[in-house]
Image (cartoon, one colour):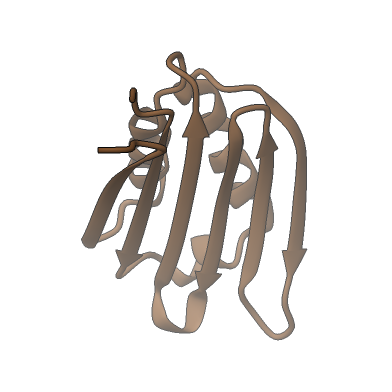
Length: 116
């Protein structure tokens, strides 16, 4: 069976707390990741927490991208799940990484939908 989907996670530390708490910057980062990864955004939902931190979730035709930030720790967790052959989630994840300029990164890739 052919792999139907890719699930990429990105954990970033030592990110500027200012960027972690900038809702417009984070929404723009998700939008740029959508463009880079050749996917179709259907909707975007965002929430800024009090006193800090935020979540941005993009609903895609191919699945989703989410960003959760923790400015007090300079930490961001990103998740991108896509299905279909034309989507390139690595390009989207790499765009997010480039924009936030973290000092420490862990990236994981999991192929899903495969029956061996």
